Length: 321
Image 1 (tube, rainbow, N blue to C red):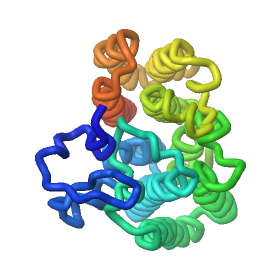
Image 2: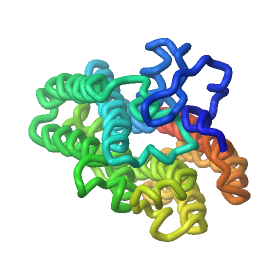
Image 3: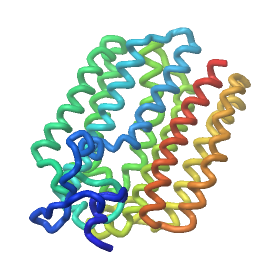
Image 4: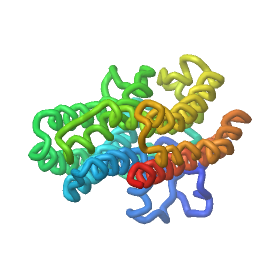
């Protein structure tokens, strides 16, 4: 495969290129806006938005909707996700994990599109903005929100930083499940109601499981290069067959959550409409089962994120009806 493919799966060859010191060809026609969009990876941001939608809908139904709290949680969660993506770009570059990558989104530091200082500054800025949003949420929710905020930012950095990096040890799946699921949904609900319950935590499992599915596709696509880089994701540890099974189980389990809530409470039957997103999951599941081709898995990743967003909207509407 030609080195140009390391830059992006999206027709980068149509741009004029320069060559960096490490031999990579990088596009010179990219605008600054395009470069930073590549860096923050907008297709992944639905993982931060979806749990806020679900938590807010549940708070509204409980009679405690607060617009400013919703906006602060949405902004703060999105900034943490962006900060995590930027940290991933920077620290993977520092560890050399991107030097053999030929698939997936452009890593702007490795491609020479931004300097190390620029990506570090952007990362700190994103986490700083999340911290500012958190100040208001702490004012509303007190010490539990302090703990959630500190842990979220810490794990966002530790995802790829230090020798204990979650993304290099196979622990990332668990933390993605928890922090993009029950913690995000529960935290959003708590800052608006100042209470929490088991049903809210249970509802949070669905977006967490969808986020695990997104991560699994990413790890399946990068399996070969992650092996070379010493990145011991679950896909690397247990193989492609395991990763494919993990993807399917995560989607199926997520779709079952609203059904389990209804069976446990005999309430909110209309929220079970969200379970039907499993039908939309059949096409990406077939793609995952058939191959590990990078281009196909890139489309699966985007489709899975879109399904997560749709799930959150359907669940929210059904919960409120």
